[in-house]
Image (cartoon, rainbow, N blue to C red; front, side, top):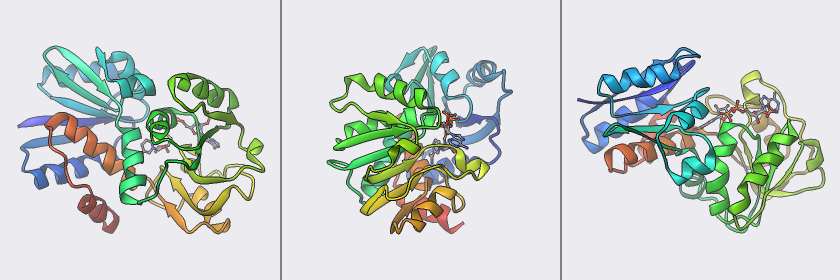
Length: 270
Ligand code: NDP
């Protein structure tokens, strides 16, 4: 049986095994997908162990995406742009690193939520690994404006600076400095929801018919509460992104593209 796993710390909460098992059933692929908690100082050792045991690939989650980037012997352009890796493929003595988070987010917004990005004013909140991963694919969707706001402004500025190759150079600021701006799509890529912290966002940021997207999922996040209070009708969580980034990893490994809609539906219902 071909074997894969998600590596993280913690990893107990991960829905990836459920998602990949559903993809495998649907596409009639013979594979096993487990979850492995690596010691915080033992990511490289865990990967070496999986390779020695014949695993064919792994997904990588918090906090190892940057280590996975450093460990990979080959990087795709998406991974290079993101500076982080969430999908590893082990073949012929090499470790290929890719990043499917960005394509997952963009596919969820465009195809599942049917919300356009081209020509839209987009605000990305956060400048951590998740924000880095989605910046390139967001820029490729050709928004009219892309603004990055982060608690640590220097990180937002550095991210905007690194996006130098793109047609559109993103703007960067603190949350407070957003006052007076208006956006069609606001994506929360901070982990502030984990601690239930409210972001210090000014009022009036949402254009009429705007989309508020929180990458976190599983419950109503403070960012969603804020968006609702601002009168936003289109509010989404990150469950669709989770399934879409997994589908892209599945495609990389198996060259078969699963249908994500029934898997998203089943996860929501559970
Ligand atoms: P990181 O730790 O790399 O980055 C965290 C980011 O959140 C930084 O920008 C940080 O700001 C900001 N932040 C954290 N706490 C607060 C706070 N209390 N107030 C304001 N800003 C805060 O995490 P990731 O980027 O890897 O992940 C971010 C979130 O995205 C996670 O919650 C994760 O679950 C989610 N995610 C969802 C995915 C999906 O498929 N749905 C995929 C990937 C991630 P600063 O720089 O100032 O520290």
